[in-house]
Image (tube, rainbow, N blue to C red; front, side, top):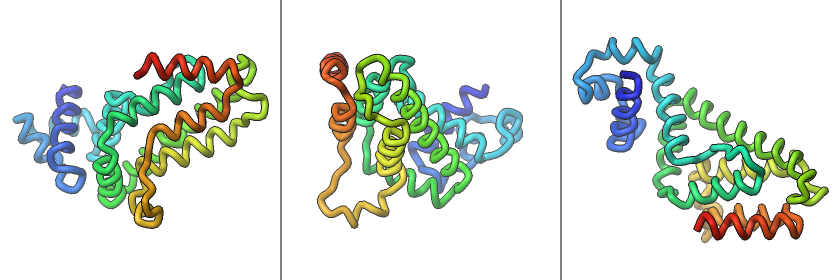
Length: 194
């Protein structure tokens, strides 16, 4: 039942957005009582957080590969390329306005992922893929800034005149971190993912 509630909630969100998302609408679509939903989720925010986590998983966003930083950033780029970026920004703005706790949850997920990338960078310096000058803080800062621009800052867009977000910035950033060995590996991964 929990999976059905999540699937239905994702469909309701896709159709109506965060503003018009209600537990009543989900219950009606599933032909169950609202009480049944509350047996599985203690609040609307908990359901929305679960839906957000499921959506991120299905889109393969913020997913660690278990490999190295190059693999993680290539996967992030590939996932971002599949998104309707203007729609994502509108949804995030709506989420921020409609549910501050769930928006904070999203921000926490973004920063957790950026911190994990930073920690992975420290490990990858020893593999010879990344330059010795690469720091955990730099990787964390750049990845978190990129994710914030992607998910949370469409109100900044008018100030950037002509700027349009491109996931290819991840390739430029990653290439700048790499040694010659790392660049060869990056080029191989990009060919594989194309």
